[in-house]
Each structure stands twice: as C-alpha cells, then as structure tokens.
Image 1 (cartoon, rainbow, N blue to C red):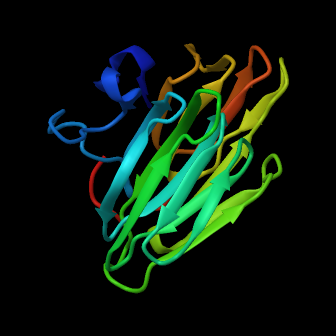
Image 2 (cartoon, rainbow, N blue to C red):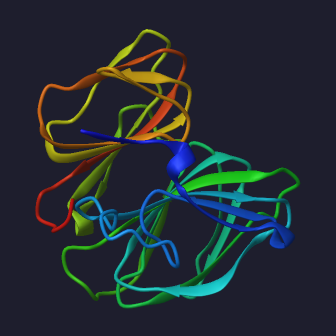
Length: 222
C-alpha cells in the first residue's frame, strides 16, 4: 500500500485564467518516472475553475476520461455534438477512442471543483462515445469496460466501515471528509494505492465521500 498526500500533488496553475490544477501522476511538464500510472489509471486531476474560467477546445485520443464534480457545475461540449452540464453526484465519461475534441468550462456563478480521472484503454482506436449518469447511488459500481475498470462511489457516515474491492489494484481518492486505512488517516485530496491486497477496509472518521477504483491487472505499470 502506498499513500500519497494532497500536498504532494504536482501543481499547475494559471491564476490570470482562474485555473488551478493538482495532479496525482506525472502530467505535462511535471515528470516523475516513478509516478507515471497505476495500472490503467494515468491521471487523477483535481481541477478548480473560477466562474467564467475553463479549458478551451483541446484534443484527446485513446483515453477513457471519467469526471466527478465536487462543487459547482461543469459545462461540457465536444466535437461529436454532445453538450451537457454535469453536477455533483453525476458521473461523466468521455471515451476519446480514435480522437475527439472538447471544451470544459465553468459557466455558472460559483467556483467549480471537479476530479478528472484518465484511464488507458486495453485496445486503442474505435469511435468516441459519451454519457452522463445522473445522481449515481452510493456503492453502485460504474463500469469502464474499455479499461477493465470499475468505479465505486462511497459516502460513508462517521464510524462506518467500507470494504475495499478484492482486485489486482485498488485506488482510493478521498473527495471530502476523513477516513482511516490501517494506520493512515486520509483527508481531502489524499489517495492510497493498493496492490494485490484482499480483505482490506477503511473506517470513516467523519461523513466522507470516496472514489474507489477497482482495477484489473492487464496493464503494465505500478
């Protein structure tokens, strides 16, 4: 098990543009050869956009992009004609496949915070696809079959124990609240990477929200 703290994330900010980004993995100019990926997971970015700020149209390919809004409202538009507004509790997935371009903006009056996770598909290419699952229920798994992955959204109450999946790799990201995993106390933005571990669980110290990835072993990298 490896614990990584929010304070140690790579920071990429554009204050004049109202953008702050915190990267859990090597990203752009922030390069760490020992922190390139965890199985299929190649990015877990915390993005903070001021009202009116956003990422102008940019390309993606051969990537499964899953987004979780923490606060505010995310406006999404892409080159396949999809346009949507993603709110807290919704799971958004964009399969870039052979190539797609999109825009992400905060068109609302309040600050926007979202967590965006990128996964490498098992096979490149194909046709882009997009979906939003509104108001996903606690503990309802969301499958990303192209990457051999399952996302579990958990919202434990204080004192509640949460069993972690028995999988080749498990990635835990704390969105809000505090939890204890063995001797480690994790807070917002902290994460844990578990490899080939079974019968693990964590305990919520407060009301919490967690993103738990169940990842297969078919990808290289740790």
